[in-house]
Length: 94
Length: 140
Image (tube, rainbow over all chains, first blue to last red; front, side, top):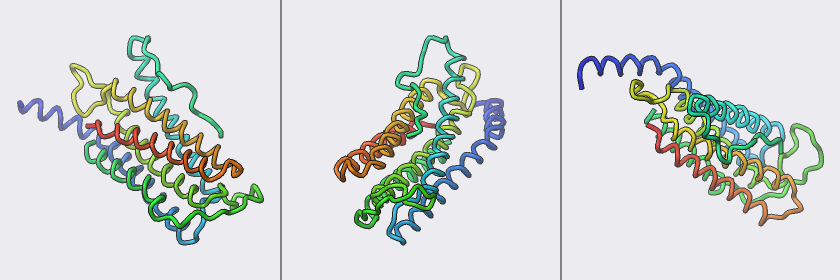
């Protein structure tokens, strides 16, 4: 590996760091909140309240839509013939 | 990304399983009101399992989204980048997991369907989630 390619990789890695750090924080927040919620419920011998569960579900919905939108952007960059199989509207309201 | 993947994989799998192993035995809590503080589900243990599953799902989604936001790999764009085909696979698995979680919610909100139906719905959601999470193992 040449010095130039190492430098190129380092620059790209540094450029990507902010979003990787953001993702790390997101992951940490999800785990912390989930564990805290579960501990409370188990201590109190109960399931989630509607408010708790709807908040978690809304967070899932928002992230799911964001992730699926990334796919649509990628497909538009492709030939335009590849569709997302099984990816029909999954935004249910249940 | 590899560290993120390892972290999310471990956390998501741990969370998906913890409610079923440590939760107290199912406690039926009658749903009598739509108040925000009312139980979301009549079965406390199933509710806890769903919280664990949805937390794990969110964790895996955060890692997958971070991967998808990297530039697309190409002849001129090398790592860190995302593989377009792998991203599509992740999206399909995400769609399946999302639908399974949604279906489980619907079934759990109908106490008349009984414990067997609730357990099956939760198990199906956990299986779909596990498939999605395991796919994040291909991220690098």
